[in-house]
Length: 186
Figure 1 (cartoon, rainbow, N blue to C red):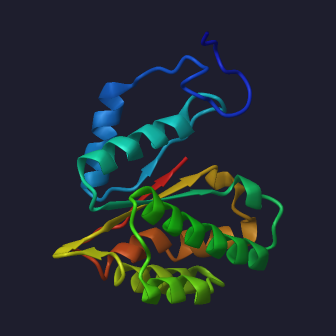
Figure 2: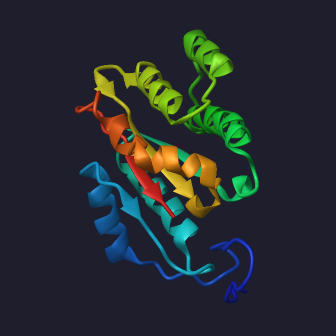
């Protein structure tokens, strides 16, 4: 029996969830256009489940989209250096998860790249994604990274300036006009 979720994560199997099909269609259109999307709403209003549904629909329609889902909530009390150390690990685990969910193996070069990855600031993060893109070619098609950042307000203040001042997410798309990086912040 479903009920209204008022605390903790919303589970569509246990809780009532508004479908938002019109918004979902518009959202996916914007992702395909390479736009940056920010959803700002109170807690427990379905932002995370909306993103999860959008990613499921998007990747079911087109496997050239490569979703990297991150959650910054856990970083709220981290120092800048701790943030980047754990962010690197989270990104690498998420890349491995995407490959596993598709039933694909990481090639040895990509495994080595992820094992040796060190993101220490916003500049090395840009470099990381530039290098990662070289591994995300499926035949003749480049994979399009969709970066989903949940609970973006958990980013440590010291790291925020680099993200926003350098406009890191916009910079990620510049070398890859044909294979856009979309960023979605919740």
